[in-house]
Image 1 (cartoon, rainbow, N blue to C red):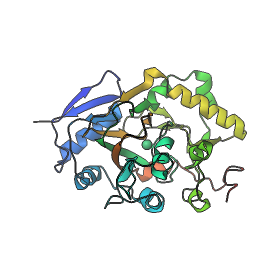
Image 2 (image 1 turned 60 degrees about the vertical axis):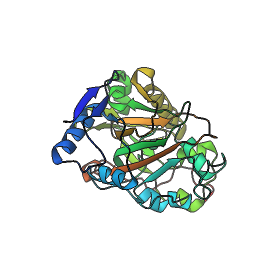
Image 3 (image 1 turned 45 degrees about the horizontal axis):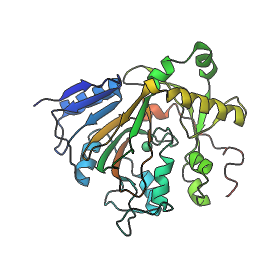
Length: 307
Ligand SMILES: [Fe+2]
């Protein structure tokens, strides 16, 4: 059986069949998946039960996997997986194995995921592909939504394109968490210093321009902090317009590979007393993308008041 790519009605989403992700992929299959992701950005695979090891191996077919998030930060919350490449996107309390109390840090982490973001946009070494798979799904809600940053750029009016053309945005890892009132330890706030990115980027695989802004943006160059934050809010609202959004309602053993350079995503609400268990691995983006990312050393005013 050969790999089959079936476009979804959302033109940046495709369903992939004819491949067994639990087995090592040959070079041609990896190439076909990369090519498909350049075009579609969100690739959905159904009925792919993967062990932790198989998930790690599948992810590693596309480049080195990030372990920094788990090692530097998430390990302090809990550490349920043998591989630091696996992110625990669940509401399971690691010590009891039961659904975490809604005040548990692991449960609160899920709340932070409800805002539009690109995984690791705040990191000097951001992610290229994230691969998310469902083990246990919520009976209702709990969708993951994806919004196309390339179409969002194309749909901007000319004035707004000109306004952001030469600006950079500062992304800060804990910006949403601070807004949510989560009290993180001062040392954790400094793990990922803020970074700056051009607000208009070109995807190297497709050559398409994209609007680079997410909920971690706390400042825009050449603007006051309030003006920058208001513009970021407006742009995120634009990105998340219904015609640019695909909602994925998970079935167990679904696997989604998404290109963080092309789409934002967010997790939707679900009953937090129900078990919802996802795992994720992610590849680190290439040095070519990092050349566009001068690092800001100045923390936004007031951001680290607790420190
Ligand atoms: Fe995410």
